[in-house]
Length: 494
Figure (cartoon, rainbow, N blue to C red):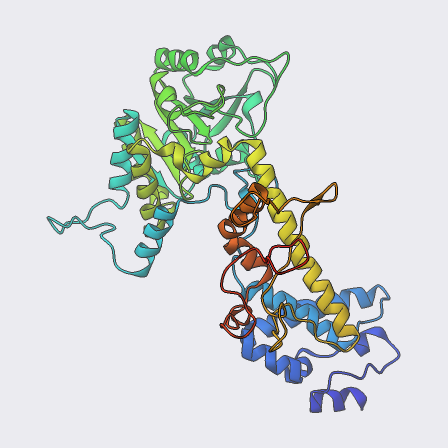
């Protein structure tokens, strides 16, 4: 009766019943509750219902193990946290991992111009596959491919959705049903448990392992060549290194072996260094170098060292690229208009000789001292926000409402936006200098300059709301400039 009454009225508070599972409310009962109805208004009924179903299933599984079901309001809170996290979509975060090209955080941040280009393309119609002069249908990545070939000297180029797709397409087009020679030291995992052997299997090619994990010689490749060999594949281990007693043939050596055997040499560069730039490590191969060394095809990602959006780029001999372009998989892995727009913008920046100004390269070359400075600033901001939150929560526990907004008292000097700060060293006021016209020391002037320079950052942390500024009215005890207070007996800036 209690459960029936609860479901009839939508009251999700009683937890009657001797068995744990009998105490679990239904989805409908929670949806009809007042918090449930408010959540539906915020997130929509389908999402709230799904979140409740997922949460209740977790509660039932725990109850089967003997755990007592939590109160109904806790169940609702857990479900609504799930719904909120889904409804909010992607959220900007601070990358404090030390990994610039972090896959989980979206790899290379786009420059502002490229992000704007993608937004413009997404908001309207664009000439994606239309030749504006003839009206005929064209290729969606023609402009990006032209930029790539002009900068690298490749005969042709092809742009697809991501780096793994580029490799899959190359293997499916050139090696289906045949053998592909790969060093055992290069059978890498590229993240998300996707491994080179798995990509080969999915393409229909047959993996032929050569050499050992730490040492592979040119003779190992020559010995493995047969009339069933489709190509030689070299994979750059961009996220790890084998050091010590280790060796592997150079790209130039493998290109010579492949050329003599009349099979293509495909080089997966991975990180996508377009050309040698300051800050790049010596062992990171560039696209230009790989082509010069004799690679017939190279593949790499667009959202790593290239500094662009997610994309897979193929460069090399025209007849091989054309075989990839005509393969049915090519349409399945094509790029969309926003990817094309962002990539074109980033490649144009490279073409103008400003590739080193892209965000990824700015971060890679940033001096450690600058990184430390930004980290300290973020840590201080975090401390300030944590302090504000704790004060508000403690005040609320005791029945008070704590605010950090200024509340000037008419007629009370210093009760408005005055912020008093002092700096003493050895008992001496470091802000005071009798010889200065304004009695301000060099330290005081630098301090004021810092406040003015970083006013936006300080305000963003300590005074985010309009109420923090609307009281800056002459006559209401709020200052309109920063000045030394000569009439104040304390040694402070206000």
